[in-house]
Image 1 (tube, rainbow, N blue to C red):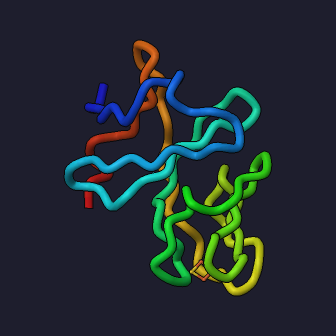
Image 2: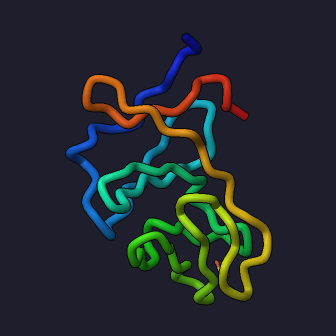
Length: 107
Ligand code: FES
């Protein structure tokens, strides 16, 4: 089994309240809870230097606080202008109650 990096406890993340996580070797990350499933994306908008965790999550969408662009949390796809470049998303594994991503996805 490949190694994983633990980002936070599952209990740290609330529906529609993404959690900002900084972990060594990765860009700033955002952890989301959508319909009882956890998702992780980069936290910095692909359109500017805004943190998505300071934006507005509505179910499976995260809206950037700067210019109102938005991404699909599950796929990272840009779904609202001016965002056009997808946001990087990471496969999530829950291990012992923690939200984890693969260690080999370090930059
Ligand atoms: S910085 Fe996110 S929409 Fe412009």
